[in-house]
Image (cartoon, rainbow, N blue to C red; front, side):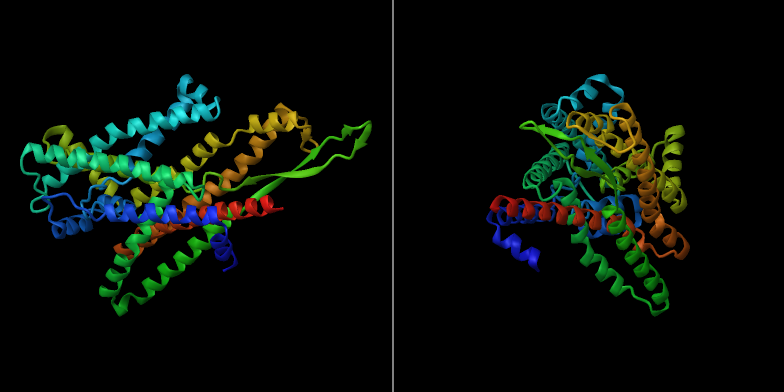
Length: 421
């Protein structure tokens, strides 16, 4: 309650919170504006039978279920982000941009946004074509209507990217993550209604089991997100006015899960991509049709899906940490400021030491995060209850984003208190 009172008292922070809430209201309103020619009831039944599109619908906040103008959500932008972060590791030009500081990041962000447009057009075309092939789901009519729907969906993605940037500018959290967070929260009432309507007393033990998993997931995500190792740092004695001043001591905090919720979002995007593309070629004959059917079937297997998801979350935790954590820069800054880690020489030895410590921390965080991510899928495979298959991933994103929002708001409150002093 004290934090909420402080948010209300600080004019700038209060304005930022209202702007973010206003953007989320606009996002949720746009998610309920459907394009013409769709039968929402038949579409809902089709999504319930299709696990992959059902998962995509959950993380888009129900935009596909409503077949709204923003049906693609921010998926094309996330795909473009993954592509350019991979390019930074293999293409020298993009690697140099990352070293240019803020100007380089602006160029990379611009390239990512521009690349999202053709990706959105491609995904919109594929999704509309897929749903058009399902009897009674969607009728695009003539070619002009089909093109208009594809362009409208592309414009919807660009619109959401703009809203995401406006949210990020308020320094309360990452705009894209917050919109995914809002989409998952918006789906909760519908899921709760389904569980209540379909409740069977014989499934009480299963319900309790999943409730325990949800609590364990929340506690574990909070534990990992808040966990950090403090590396002691000493600063050499300085000279001022001919007198020596005693050196100071501080610490360098290294978080167990420095990548936050981004690995989960990346993993979901890649898990969804192959079966979604394969859906378009299922009706084809020959080798292409057989390959498409095989892809759909193998991704529909709960165990294969869970194992792949586990390794993707594990990999992207390492990958994204390597992108954002630069031990060479930290070692260089410490040396420039006269700081050193006790027992470790400045420069290359400090860089190697930080790399070694961070690798051990990331392994722990990545393993823990991946296990929690697939735990609900394992339980779903054992119990056969489909309603809870998405709970673990949703909770991971919701809890991680909520922690990030709370942390950034707390930082703004502390900055305001310092300014007053």
